[in-house]
Length: 356
Image (cartoon, rainbow, N blue to C red; front, side, top):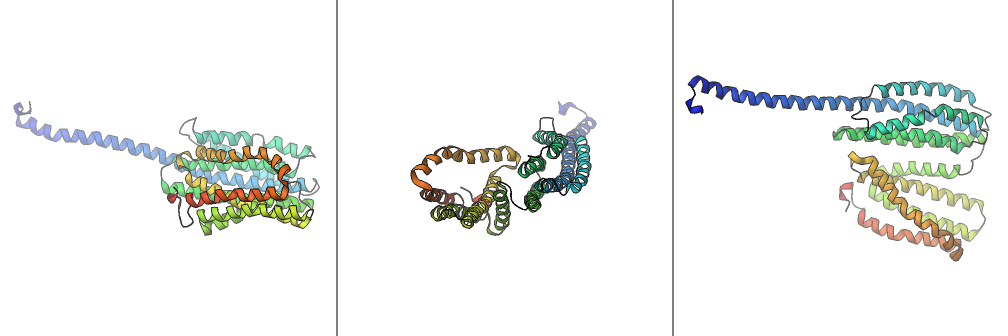
């Protein structure tokens, strides 16, 4: 067919065909670049949103600490500070809601949208909870802290989900680091809330000393984790958790001794906080960043299965073995896990890629 065309037509065909092909390819490339640009703009907006969200978290942490101190004092001291902080929290909340309205989600059923809606639902109950703190004299420090901590954790979960909205590894690493620092700050803030409440009341309430020891253990664990590495931390903290059972063996042998009891409880909760830190770090290392929330929830649920079933037999074991031998058995039961850990997380391994 081309052979029968005139020279001019052949030249036109030879020149125009590549131009048409180039135009088509350029159009496709432009479309892809525009799509990437839209995604990049959305990710940038979400990242800015995450940074602004941290201000609301900060204000709620301060309100939690002051509220816990006021409740711990028997509602006798610190109410003025609570009221002033509520004003600051309300301003940060108004800014957060404005940012949510300006945020464009990939779709209404996205996980990020669900997490934002969950946080907004909790924040919608903030005024009711404040009123309950004022009107209910039986409300404890622990319950006050738990309510605010629930909201703060939901807000931090929004930050974590933002890291899954892009394939940019540098951005993922930066956002993940930001979230890790935010969670570390949250642990420190929660510790401050417990100490503030204890100082206001002049004593620890029921269960508050244990929770404080666990939080301090988590902070120590985080610091040591950075120095020792993940696998050495898993082994070291696991051994400490196993040894904490030996402290209760000493308590069972000594009998009623307040100093030994406090030491045993503190040691158990400190080592428990350290072990939990390493365990969470391991599970996060195993998660695919695209499905972090789902996989992390699955791992934590699986980790709780043995504890749920074995707990049912503890009463029978204590009755037949006695407390001393029961805690000795608990320490021995940690040995198989330590041996398995040597296989799964070798002492000399340096990063999560060496998991088998």
